[in-house]
Image (cartoon, rainbow, N blue to C red; front, side, top):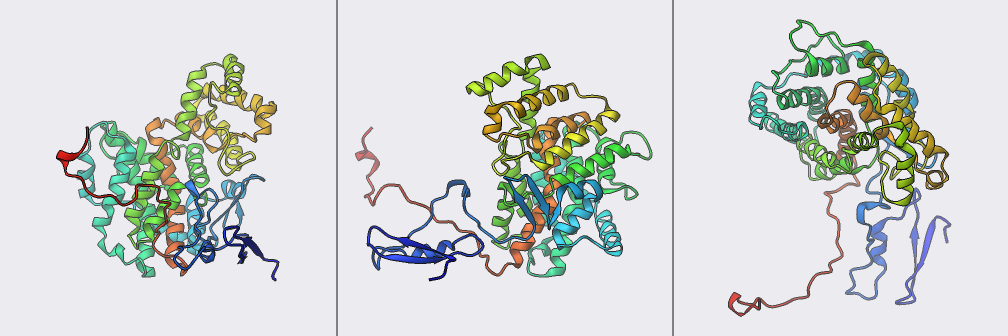
Length: 430
């Protein structure tokens, strides 16, 4: 008997089964062999929220939640945030290696020269109500790109895939900025190919009457770092959605629109907004101890603490905490920062939070920085999506090329009614 196996005894029949273990997992299909008879379907696993189910093999992002480790393709997030650009990280996620100088120049050139969108998409955006949520506009326009590039349905062709990946990364900031400008009634600001990826986004967000927008270098770099920190995070809700839609061989535009829709949910992309609302409610540093006590009593929930994956200090939160000071030197201090710092200080010293491993996560500080840079709360999930698009595409591509993958079609445990006969309406009781 091999040691890399699991022996299961079915107490219903007394039979034992040996289930192989590979990479710390068992193949769920092996459970089908555990039956009470020939007409038995076999055992299945029941896992709401897929909390303990691996649906794929991936070589993109590694997370050790207990140790607080996040790596893209093996590179620690701390090193990438310090040294790399967002487009360099996007290339890494998609191709598995950091680009050479020539590869980097070609990649940046391709992205830069695909930032413009068809003028008809502007008309589409103009059709939204004047106060439409920017994320709703983004989801719709990303999906609409599918109709402009019908060849994108050739997902098995590498050249076609590569072109759509470039288009999506390049056009995402344009769509994001246009959605914002529409929501506040400002004319659209077109891309400027002389600027960096993040600098160009800030240009499309904030340019008014000036002929040439010059982003502040500190804010431009801060934008790049924030996008890097959001670029991928393994099999989260939106990434799983991207893979699921892509498993039907749908094009990446509609798949990305579906992923963005998942991110639109307040439990996924709205966490940093919830942190800001919490800090606003607390209102002053002097009130922090009272809210800490209420949280411990179950009367108040501290937002931005704890994470489904991390049971240690989120490594992204450490980077953003430091980044906040650089941003505030340019924008002026956000008074909410003092409240956040005091919350963190007390929580990290309090046995209640320490024993439950409730540490600040990436959302705890990101909203404060975005607010200081001038972004309204409605843009927070849009910014999240803009950073996450290369990660989504890397997983979509990995899924397309994975021979083990098939169209996603989970099972269910049926708990409804047995067969029953139709009753005419006149014979039905009240």
